[in-house]
Image 1 (tube, rainbow over the protein chains, first blue to last red):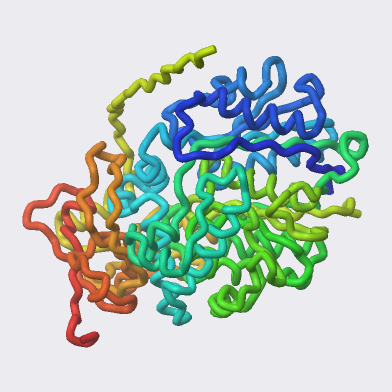
Image 2: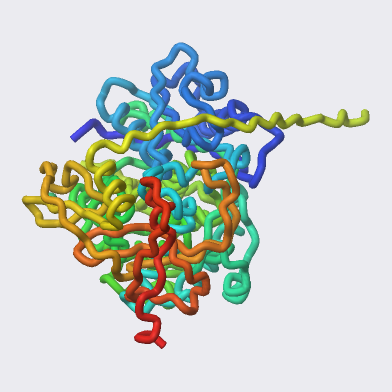
Length: 385
Length: 161
Ligand SMILES: [Zn+2]
């Protein structure tokens, strides 16, 4: 067990399809400046920096070096962490580990991406084995679509079940001034949107965005001095499974199941549906918003479509999911999972404005990446024992 | 005061960088058997008994070396599929992919894991999880999984009509 650590500051850009008004360093700096301002800290008070993105999107390696002007990392210990889709949540975990180690008092975690600078699906497809799997591997959309075809067959779920989750996230996103997509949609809008890859339609799928996010961690003593309402990190867990996509059983999400089970055990959570007040989940497509609820232990296998239909995860439901609009509304990939952590922290801090869920004490944030990796982080308003 | 109009430049680079991926002994044998004999091989883990396709040296679950080659069928069952309709660049060639195409996850007879390949049917209404499919090989072959096997085709369409 490491030292206690709280999130004391959160900053993000106004995410857009294309931010040609800024370059990479400048978009990073926007998020960092906002996080520092929110915590009323200066860059001199930051002891270490962790930064991540997915190299292929911008075609730039050595992001730790390349970003220094924007990150504020000059003459500080910087580490680059890049794990594909989970980059943001791995950056979050690494930042937490550094602060929890007792070696650093304040750690700045940064995730960012300028997805508009290249072909997102082509870059993602490079995660698949070039000789044995890549040829028909259509970015993230293809495998997620195939995954839902398996789930629908096994449990009788429908395309509409997924569309309903898309409606939820899009309508939540309308309340989030930082979201990339902020348009309210109806079930018919989703049903009638263009088919990207059967059974996933345009409004079911995350966009690709330009944006950045920064989160500041502080050790126990420091955190209390910075803010009265830190979002305490209870635990974070990561699970990986296979090298080959064809190895996994796609009717379940085993890594998310194992990661959340382990995190709940450490956090003493037995009934996630009732013990969490809000979840900010990395759901790249609405189909995942159905299926993966089962892997999070919120309901039994095959019961997720009913959970969505009954509105349990709506803003006024028992367990609001993605008040920010989630990944379906905002997706600067290296920042995406860190935004989940940031949004969950804002909920705990009571700073989520129009998207605030009342009286949040416990929140869950997740990250998702390549041949099914899952990260989960549990945050709490009360200091963990 | 008149606001100055900002000019925002975008600089385009088309990159070409060649890669030579090493197959190692397991993938090499796997690809050569398809090329020379139209046979698809898997490999069995001595500990958990799983038959992996494509074959590889280590079972990741058991962290155990595998050496028992198993001949699989050229037919199998659809585990999942998607008909891809959106445009994107094939990162291995730099060319736009030809769309639509059907990406199909096939559990070949005798295998515990899936091969991801093309299906020649592009109408999602005519494809179902659980259907049997069969490999279609090319006459000329070159040790490329996605060339030597042209695509899969539905083997028992009538069963589902
Ligand atoms: Zn094994």
